[in-house]
Every structure is written in structure tokens, then in C-alpha cells.
Image 1 (cartoon, rainbow, N blue to C red):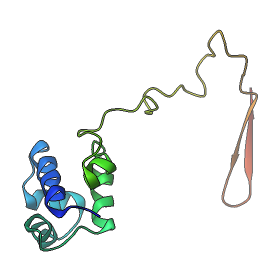
Image 2 (image 1 turned 90 degrees about the horizontal axis):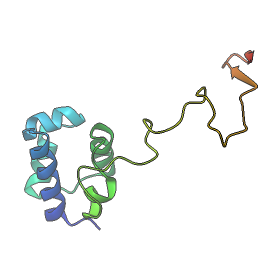
Image 3 (image 1 turned 90 degrees about the vertical axis):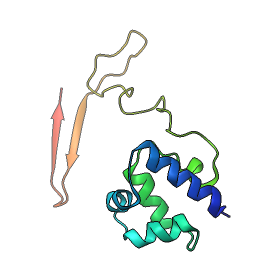
Length: 117
């Protein structure tokens, strides 16, 4: 169960970090301004949709931090982030023996294209 007071504090931390007023925050995540007001005042509890809108818009927000305060904010970059993932077409390292032989692209009309090296 979410502790509303602590959740509100984390929302305020997020807003302060990004220098957003409640109005701008509501606009950014696509909810009514009154929703933010009601959640910040403790009148309403956040819905799952509300929480997912926050984590979708703010990539630096860890879901567990937002829900129960565990983890950190802003979220640390993962070692498996897209910037550190090797490209399929990069040169193999000395220890790799795998090489791409072909790529097949399937289209939604049932056709496909095949690319061979």
C-alpha cells in the first residue's frame, strides 16, 4: 500500500528537481491540473495510470522509488542502457566468433526481404 504522505513528498521532490510547478507537471504528464492538486493535498490517491504516466515521461524516475521510496532518484543509468549495448553491425571483438550471415525483414502484408552478407 502506498503511503500517501511519502508519495506526495516524492512527487514534490520530482517537481523541484525538474523545476516544474504543479500546473506544468500536470501538463507534462497529461493529466488534469485538479488531479495533481488532489494528490498533493492528500485528498486522492494516485491511480496506476497516473504513476505510469510519470514513469513514462520522466525516464529518471525509478518505479520503486516513486511507489515506496526504495532505490534512488534520479535513477542511475543501467549498465544495459542502449548507449552501452553493442551494435549488431559492429566489428566482433577478439573473443567473438559469431558473424551475421543474413537478416530477414518480415512485413505485415506477409512479404519479406532477405539480406545476405
